[in-house]
Image (tube, rainbow, N blue to C red; front, side, top):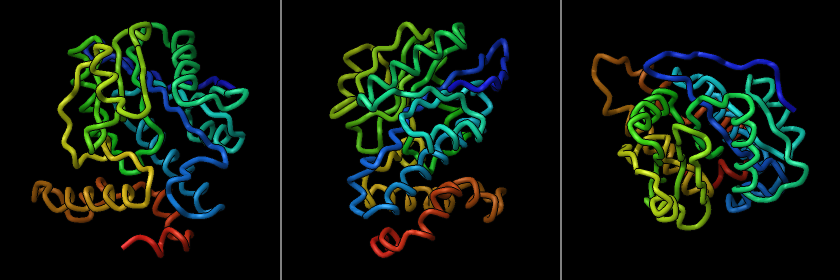
Length: 248
């Protein structure tokens, strides 16, 4: 289902980006978290809500397109203000991304297009804006995950240039496809995708450390608010006895 609303924030020098975000939203989502349902599903949805919310809040982003096979995810993302594309059945990450890219071709044919993973609960809109600004210098660009093995985002100034290859070892695959790697600090929430509880704790610790090292002119309250895990993830963690017991 496509919503009628788009977030058109176009600037001649800094064109508004379209961001495609695939969200599995099935009972198998985030199985590596190692916790039982319904906690696992609630956390997986919270990661996606925080990721999409951050993308919608980014100044450089004009349109967010979420691809999912889930009714629950579809309704939630629609309510946030994203466009939604429904998979008839889950076919994997890269086929879902292709559906999103097809939607971008139809709805924002002249916009630069980024593909962003939907499990970045510590994503700061300012970090996304900074990466998208740097991506304007390259026909195709990418951001690796914190481990330097996978990929959290790929960008293209023209949607037809995308050659996405998400999966195991995707950083190397995307480099081979011609994407230029952007230099983004490993502590950035943009690079902290979450598949396991250890990943979640790493994201939490990295952003917590970042709040300590920010400029002294920023208040402690403001810096913590800007860098911590997203609100949906924090609420899900508070409700999840399994995750709460496993995290330090």
